[in-house]
Length: 436
Ligand SMILES: Cc1cc2nc3c(=O)[nH]c(=O)nc-3n(C[C@H](O)[C@H](O)[C@H](O)COP(=O)(O)OP(=O)(O)OC[C@H]3O[C@@H](n4cnc5c(N)ncnc54)[C@H](O)[C@@H]3O)c2cc1C
Image 1: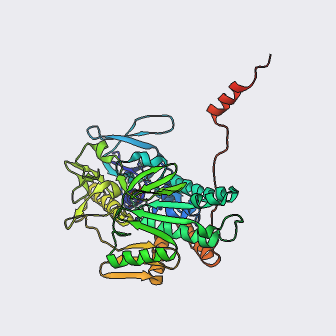
Image 2: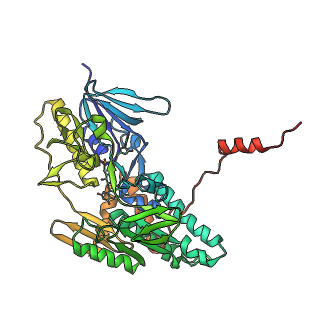
């Protein structure tokens, strides 16, 4: 008899945990992702600030699952789900809407940026969700220093070296801290016309405090630390405008060539694919076994799912996605093998952390609240532990030790494409004088 087929969409934290939980299941597991790699998003800001290289926070999904013989990995972009025919539709480089049949489906397609209805901001303030986003931010940051060094008019240096981060949640705070260290230590002695130490970092948020998921005392500690590092923290006002010249906030223009969006997220379109009930943010409302109402064979996990526990929605963090992915995998395993189903899903909160520059982090876990060096060590240990492979853990650890003692960063490269551009090449040809 043919084995049942389980399709997983997304090889992020949720999808990968689900695939691993199914390793001993007598089933065909098909994991579809639009990228070929599992990305450790919590360290994206370290790629953007040149501490780590892209390959140190991402691993090919098929490499992680190479020993799992029942799992096939497909590179493709899922574009829809046909619940009646039990098919996922995906597109790849040369085919559109390819159907893949499923007996069980796990959607773990994550989230993307949200510009809170101002999609026009994206052109001037790119977000940070993918590896390409982080490399693009790194290019922009390093390029700003190069442009300032090439600029002979010192009155322009300040504007070129003003960096604005919008969103003072964990990503914005961590990025601001890392940028401050990059500017004040790593780049310090390498420029002649500009003093990187005079660069300005502005962190904006409409919330009244930084790191709102943390307690007030920890957010205050993080804010003080940022200010000590020279970051200007401006809270309580939403951004009115972002354009090629910078940002307008509370009626004031901040001139900047480098604006980075570190604010909201929006879930993947899984709710639209399934045509089921979603919450206000667009996440799929799921039941206590993580399945979609009236479809016990369809599960949604991680950032794209809305799950309430004790009357509160679970946050969009890696731990939730991993625990949900693992649960969905185990539940499907129990159904296929005829074992007892696990009890309804319950999230176990292991705590939250955010790092602010060197030697300082904040940590909150139930009644425990820590800030400073101890929390920073815990942050480093936990992040190393959750990297996908031992080789990443080793290289990241060595890089961190090197950076800690020398101030040198791992990957300070501006990587841009200088190949021929077809449209331009055609234009240039048309301008060539005709040869008689
Ligand atoms: C910059 C940043 C920093 C963060 N820091 C932390 C932190 O410090 N601690 C923490 O706990 N959490 C952090 N998070 C949140 C955490 O990364 C997410 O909660 C977690 O990744 C959610 O897991 P997921 O499996 O739902 O989605 P993801 O891990 O995002 O995985 C989704 C996967 O689906 C794939 N996919 C999406 N759409 C499609 C499609 N149409 N077709 C095929 N594949 C698709 C994507 O390529 C991706 O591989 C951070 C997030 C970001 C962006």
